[in-house]
Amino acid sequence: MRRFVFAVSVLMFFCCDAAVITAPAQGFTTLHSFAGPPTEGSSPNELIQASDGNFYGTTSRGGINCVDGCGTVFEITANGTLTTLYNFCSLNNCADGDAPQAGLIQAADGNFYGTTAGGGTHTCFGYTCGTVFKITPNGTLTTLYSFCSEQGCTDGAFPMGRLIQADDGNFYGTTSGGGSNNCTGGCGTIFKVTPSGTLTTLYAFCSQINGFCLDGASPMSSLIQASDGNFYGTTLAGGTGNFGTLYKITSAGTLTTLHSFNFTDGADPRAALIQATDGKFYGTTTAGGTYGGGTAFKVSSTGTLTTLHSFCSQMNCVDGADPQAGLVQAHDGNFLGTTNGPFSFCRSHDCGTVFEITSTSMFTTLYQFCAQTNCVDGAAPTAGLIQTANGNFYGTTSTGGTANFGTVFTFGPATVRLQPPSLSFAPQALDETSLPKTVTLTNSGTALLTISNVSISGDFAISSNTCTGAALIMGKNCKVMVTFTPTALGMRAGTLTFTDNAGNSPQTVPLTGTGIAQATLTPANATWAPQTVGTRSAPKTFTLTNNQALVLTNIAISTTGDFSVSATTCTTSLAAKARCTISVVFAPTQMGTRRGQLVVNDSANNSPQISNLTGTGR
Image (cartoon, rainbow, N blue to C red; front, side, top):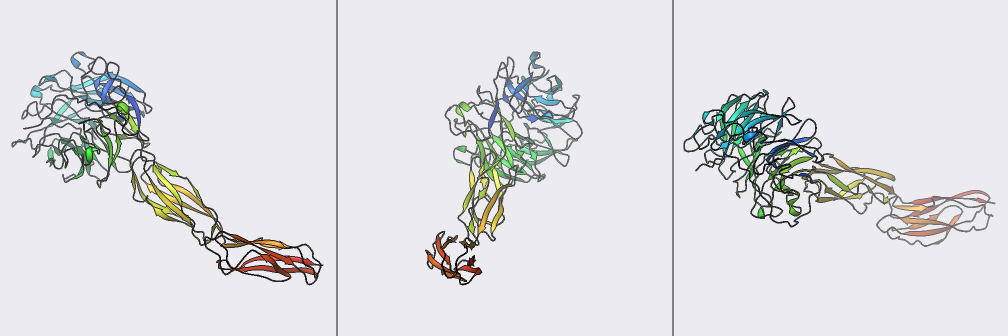
């Protein structure tokens, strides 16, 4: 009736279809494919970035002379250079630990601390019971505690979650077995251990029976210490429906069950919670929900739970299923996580995914593993993601890679590519709107790009916009169309601005254009050579240009002074963007300087257009 998990069980799932389903996501990089035994570990757990900038983690299998168990501690650089720091089961009977199921933490002293689900100096229920260990950055390992040191394993057994270091400097964690004897193999514990290895059991699960372990049973996840100083976590089983619980526990060991899952809102949570910037807790369940594929949820400190997403809600479960890892809140405030399956058959959507979800339930699948031939990009991620200061995400897959022993991967945050990077408009008649030009914004990263606003300045306007409010997955784009309506003569400048969740937000596109008159008469000034009084000069040619996209109408041409029109190609109208010519001659009526004007009246807003004329009579 109860579904308790105690012994170490590392499930390996292998993809069976080598077909290329989709191209790899832009920005997604496989940093390392584990070689497996006998040289490297396999099935890596979650990573941490240490104070030296490198990443550290554990593998649950592999290492020297190990296939089905053992495991390693490794270091990997940002460019993918991996160093194995320690191989478990290096001591007889694996007294140094076996099969770590969780990653490391770096403590205040600079060393790393972790747990192994098996190994140690004691046996329980037919298995070795697990350890707490310390390892230095250069690979020197010390076993701090071996579980089942107490009769009946009341101190716990089989720790599956990561440790945390609390405000008091001590480490806190959970065991999936041991503790109470109300269920076979024990129901699990919450413990505190000092840096020197003194362990105190704070709580033994299944203390409240009443037909079920109402307080929960078999915690698989690590704890978190919340802003209120208390610790929060999940149990895989127990609760009123035996589908697991959410709980709070004080440092003194007083436990409060905040929520019992009922399958509809989720079941079997394995992952740790996180406390987000809004003060609420966010997490995942591996099963349950509307479609049985697990859930992502948020819950208040008093236990009010909201299901944000039920996995397998899309055809063929392309949104993923079985999220075994928790969530991470990214720099933009959204949450990212991984799904481990489903595994009914291997297609791009059956080997796990990376997803993003907002606090208001907007869900996006960012990457589908096994997108590359033979799943060299990895498959079945069981660990969560981390985001580094530069915005990049890092994670692991339990299988896949070139040898099918798992991978370390990275991908970038949402990034923006604007094309073209600037817009320049042809000279445009005043108060007249140009034809539109298009700016295309593309998400060139892997994370979801959400665009909150698009604005524009200067003598420019947005005529069409598919970007504001858009949520773009990798490689997708939106478009903004821009027009130019000059309000003054000469060079005009403006800016198109995009505001979004990319690290370099806001992005800008410089805009330029030149305002010109609606109609022009050139040249603006003309001078004739001295001309004998009473005679007529050779003509000079003037050009009337219609700079508008409209027909210039009501054209009337006149001259003043000793000047006259001798010929013209202009009529009473002039087509859009067209030109006509006017020939003017000089016939002085007396000696000395003579002045006049060529005047064109028309429908343009700068009418009349005038050229100044000068000649000398002799």
